Amino acid sequence: MAIIGCGFIGRKRAEALSDAVVTVCCDVNLERARSLADQYGARATVDWQEAVSSTDVDVVFVATTHDVLPVVAEQAVAAGKHALLEKPGARRAIELEPVKTAAARSGGLVRIGFNHRYHRAFRKAREIFDSGALGDLMFVRARYGHGGRLGYEHEWRANPAISGGGEGIDQGMHLIDLARWFCGDFTYIQGYAATYYWNMPVDDNCFFLLRTPRDQTAFLHASCTEWKNTFSFEIYGKRAKLDISGLGGSYGIERLSHYHMLPEMGPPETTIFEYPMADDSWRCEWRSFAEDIRLSRPPQPGIEDAQAASRIIEQVCEMKDPAK
Image (cartoon, rainbow, N blue to C red; front, side):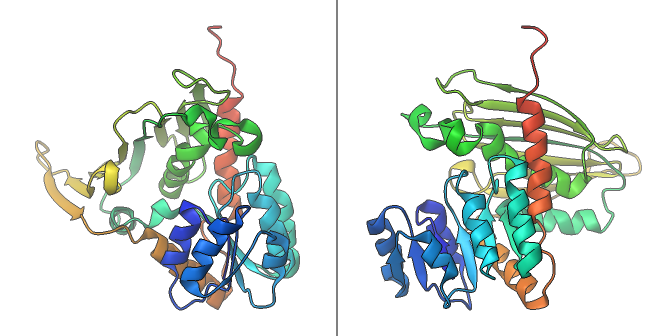
């Protein structure tokens, strides 16, 4: 394994590996690369091109800023490696086209790091959903937000040349991916990207109203003016509702509530699953990718999923406010 980007997420990726060896850690800050490399007996470098082409590397984890993600991934798969890119994969959907082309030529597999699919509550929710217990899906409703921190408007996420956007492309990307995972493709897209509080040229709140060809609807809101960290994802079927709340840590205990409608209606039959233990989504996501590689199967979520989510964000962020 090569870890490209040895910050918070790169470290999480390294910690989540099982049955794998970290051989090289790369970062623009050599000391940061060395700090991570020393934990795994790996070598440290600032040269990502050397790292992704090394003969002792099979898989590359790309945990850089958004502008660099597709550049590193393209060269990695062109060198015959497999790659896991952190979401969003790129600043815009079109930037992933060269990665797709390189992967088709080399046979390298590319997975996008939508680890929220692998949280325990979502794994259980998907199991219930796939059983048909909800009946026909009607709509999903979700909120995801944090409150930023002092100096947030000066961080790289506030620079559109580096990040590609604001809260929509940050936490909103996860909400769109999860909504697509349950609903499928959205063909009707409306929304509004707003900058209410933070003095920055990207959105600090993004609202999405999405609809499938079957009129299944997703109403999503991503915010960095939430003040108290919040995660809520509700899935409404004609026979039952699933409510996922919390992600652990500052977002609160991860919980799945299953509300099953009774024939006589009234208060539903309720089952609650709580997951107070440490988050294992990163480890589960890696194991799934390792299985993709072993079976030579297309990763899900892959490049197309990231592009579909990115196009939704791009369309909403480019919409003009008719009231202005």
